[in-house]
Amino acid sequence: MTPAMEWIERRKLLAFGEDYGTSYFKFGPATLGNKPDMFENRGYFYTPTRVEQALGAPATRVIVGPDLAQYLQSTSDLSKLYYPMRHGTISKDDEKGWTIVKEITRYALNKYAPKPGDPQYPGFKGFWVAAAIAANSPNSMYERLIEIHRELNEESDRPLVQALTIIPQPLAVAISQKQIHCIVIESGHGNTQITPISRGIIYGAMIPLNRGGQDADNMARQILRDLGYQDIAREEKIVTEFKEAVGLIPLDLNRAVSEAKRDPRRFKAVFQIPEAGIRIELEKESWQRFLIGEYVFNPSHPEFESYYSRGFHRPLDTPLPWGTIPGDASLAQVIRESLNKCAIEVRRYVTSMLILSGGNFSWRAPPELSGYAVDAPTKIKYELKKENIDVPRVMMASDPQYSVWRGCIFYATFLKPEIEWDSKSREGWVLFIRE
Image (tube, rainbow, N blue to C red; front, side, top):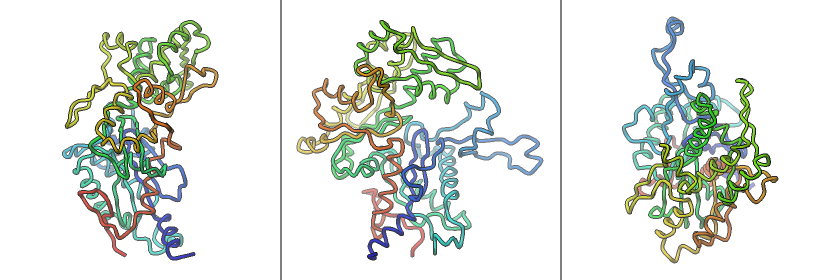
């Protein structure tokens, strides 16, 4: 094995990815393979019971991680959960949010940092961490993440992080797919990032749309309310499960709704909550399944006007330096706006491929509903054609929920260690522990 190959193999052992998503935090070393560890990107400021305090528990502490749910004692506690990156970014003075980010990062690194003397990690000085955040994150977020990783090293009795780099999530997706000219649309729970890439992000053309999986959740919640399930509609996790179980993306909403109303039995869906003894059937209302998926792609469709007239909120507008993107603009229209901000000579390169990534694009298309229900790439290509935008290849990132993390691992493995962090270009390594 050559020295270069030995270096890469060593780096693979030390590479660690952190994807700070709007809903989930995905993390772990390269040794996990293709699937990261993950839990919800949230925290709970817990006040122990008197019994726990008598046993020496601190007055208040931040609970994060997969066991958080066991600390919730009632439905009202759900409102106390704090999602620091609900909309992708955290303000500089959101100390509550940054406290949670620090604790989830501490949890992640401590879970996988080897114990002293581990033969698999001789001379371990910490992981080489690539952290991914929203492409529109301000400088203050980069600075605070660097500070947090430095503090975690100082507060630990063993090395955790030898070096840190930070990468925009859409660029991590492009890296995971080994593409340097493309458009990446990364859609998570809280936002959708439309990002043209030509050897790097074209920041002047990037649009961080204030629309994501939570908006589809809101539509699913309204459908549950209309069906008479007000109590279930308050349970955020069950609403998401309902959306994922019954929601469909229509190729053409008018045609899909018309056919579902004509033959509702064919489009029937059943959603069950066994532990609550609840069974929800959509047969006569089966056409509403298509509203959930359509809302992700085009909330300005006339079919939604009746919901807006009843007080259902439109997605939030997106203010940008050069104008405002209406919250209900179709995804195809937003892609056009983004391309219009690219230099004409570059457009033919970035439009050679469009990559969809994120859980908000992970929709199933039942074969028995072919022609009416489709997957996300088929829908996007159909909508772009209506806007006269030709993209030869529209593809879903492999394992779209994990593509950002996988890009982090690739970046942490192959970014040369001698490249030092440059706060202007936001590239390179912040070295905490030298060799």
